[in-house]
Amino acid sequence: MMWFEPTPFVLGGAPGAHLQVKSLSAGYGAFLVLRNLSLEIKPGLTVILGPNGAGKTTLLKALSGLIPRQGEVRLNDHHLPTKTHEIVQRGMALVAEGRQLFPQMTVTENLELGGWLCKPAERAQRMEQAFADFPKLRQRAQQLAGTMSGGEQQMVAVARAMMSAPRLLMLDEPSLGLAPKMVDELLAIARRIADAGTTVLMVEQNVKKALAVADRGYVLERGTLVASGPASLLARSSVIREAYLGAPAATAKA
View 1 (cartoon, one colour):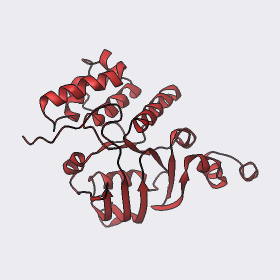
View 2 (spheres, one colour):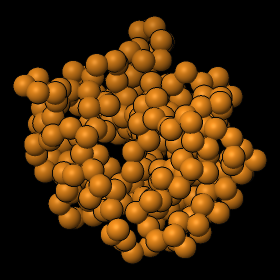
View 3 (cartoon, helix red, strand yellow):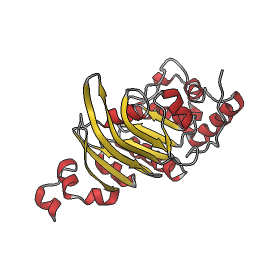
View 4 (cartoon, one colour):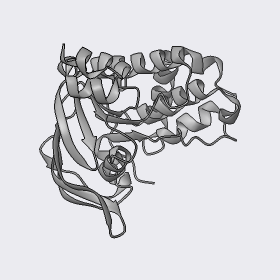
């Protein structure tokens, strides 16, 4: 078993990361979804917006090593590896769409898998911190993950990712299929993680709520960036309001 050096674990994990992406191309087989995409993810919370099929999930998969990529990706000025386990060791973690938990395993067992690469004593320490950061999960520690509600499962997925003490946490559609109250709670958790020091990169379909908690945003359409900027400005943009927030043209321009 190969161990890596432990990093401090709090709700925000290790110190935040700066990700630079230049001329990124990625897709599936011969079909490229992203072509020459360049963007910069700074400490804080950045949201990626766009319609279905825009390439948002493809971007996260390429950054996490789940699909091949071309171009340059640097994490804190160091080239990012292409193998998933090496990317995790460098300080990046992905909470995939659909949560991807092990339903027949308990909450505790799912969390343990998130810290599998660190030494047992460090893993136990991170587990205790996870339960402190997500008190609802402490009450459900021995419950099978598959018997939990969608919102509770999403909490387990986020806590499991935080067990690796990431410098950059990627969230793919964390609010998908959840009740409005749970959506608010999970987005608030993402905001707290960013405020505590971990850089957060989030793909989210709930445009209004995502921009309300984010620092910056990018808008993807057909694998190409069409808008970017501070979240507060994007929320007031006529293009964003007409396309994603349902505002009529006259209202948006006003």
